[in-house]
Image (cartoon, rainbow, N blue to C red):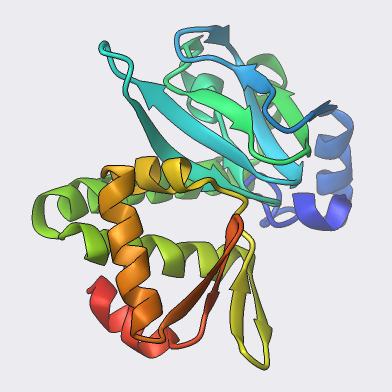
Length: 224
């Protein structure tokens, strides 16, 4: 668990002693697959680091449509906005698999930031990365077609959850076809058509809640 925590922005610039002290200020929790950690609009003042498993961050429109903002795994952080601006949660967080987390409250972080610029820099890096990602998503929705967005999503999932084998990169994303469609902002039918096209070209092989990428180069070109 400590190795996973050291990957998080809060920890990666700290020495071992400081990291251990910060770790002692955090609280661990667990969720079963499908359980909700918190919902959009809930009040909250904690940030979380994923220790095990995967979670999805999603929002629901007024007419009930769902959109996935991100899929996160071990070492990744969410809820960090509440550390600086405690208030209603901006997304619903649901466990995609059984998952474990470590959390830090606004009050504990405030004490930690005094005299520890490395922690502040780590959080600013995290927030900047989140903003850059949001800008990329907006640009993709405007400029990229659905197959391009699907290809880009598969590559992103492969970079974080992929395992290289003789027959390609095995990506156990644990998402349903509907969730994958929500992630790229398109209908399930359109996303399934794109996946079937990639498979017919020999770029990927589809498996339940996973995919094997057999031609990463061509898939990458389609993502551009």
